[in-house]
Length: 524
Image (cartoon, rainbow, N blue to C red; front, side, top):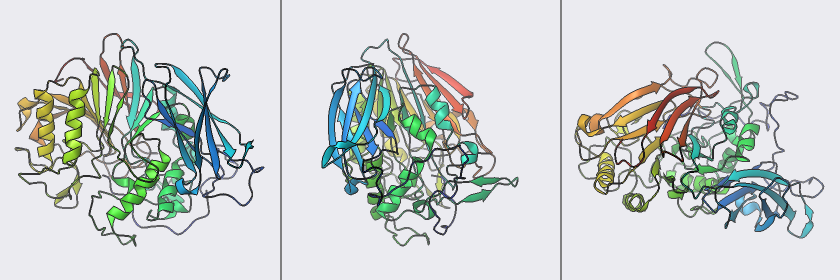
């Protein structure tokens, strides 16, 4: 949602913002293709490893090589890798920006899996690089095994990038130390429309310094520039260490392409030579699929972002895509709006999968908030709400249909999680306060940003009766991470009672707000 900082910056030398000898960030040697001078001629995986969309018996292992390579993965129950199982992955090359994914299946449930990735010369398997290791837990099959996960979003936004003086993206280290089962990233993983400057002067005169790269010196338009934007975050040691320990469930939002974009849009932005949002979004989606292990996406840009990730009997995570199927942003006063923000097909899918779910809790991962009024210019609106507290209109009609379905199908345990607005809050929706009354009460929790500008609180739309028992937001626009603590949310599901506890935390781990929800209820 949040509009990024202004025009582009001149091209800069690679990693200019990283002070030599600072000792703060260990940065990999950056290469966009096969380098002229190979390190002993063996493939390297300096960008780390990550695992995505983990279930009770499966997961996807990701790596990026510095040259063409065969990807091999070994898994074992212990760090010694005794009795390891070997998985033969793909040959990876320039067609996927030297990224590759190997699916794992038949894994034991509820167990710690140790894995290591080896990259070998495709023409000579004896020439292999140093193994890169990681670990993750598969989802439990037993109800009594609890679940903990974190969520947040909004990374490297508004020109606030990797600052070596602060230790980089240190919020990832805060989350890693809490050892969650997985991390839900709710979108704006990159800011393709926000260049990263070498330095920014803060209001108090301090200097914010950024690690910079050539690709992040301008807005992303080409596939290479989008790939470079996704690579940028992996320069951060905290994130690479986090990725090696915590699996991810990743979705996208507007800044993967351009602020507030929608299908069919022609950009009114002088920084761009490519104005067609559909062209830009296709390039971004391809890079997105290359740089995150997502079960329903292919590295060639095919497939879809929306999906359900089943995390054992306690939890199903329904990942939405409120960007690719929406109609144009507008004043939102339509009395009939079948396309809405999800598109008709995605809405049918969500209703069907919610009805089929037997999990105790159904977390709906929404890349946009429901009742917060998110403007797009002077007359249009970006999210669901449009500020009219009366009966549902525009995109609110889809939400009303979904909430009615949840009520009448007696679907229990629904909780909405989102980011997007660059502050943290909790909203409770109830029919007795609402203009639309055919639904059961529910909660929506907002967190973020991870490393981006903080913004002021938005107004609430009364159509679905929101109350806001907690909010923490800056009092001015685009406060830096040095001025406004960054935020993440935490969910704990108790395996004994089935209770779900939400904690809204800020950088450093401090709990700002908590709420305990009871299982087995249609409304909360």
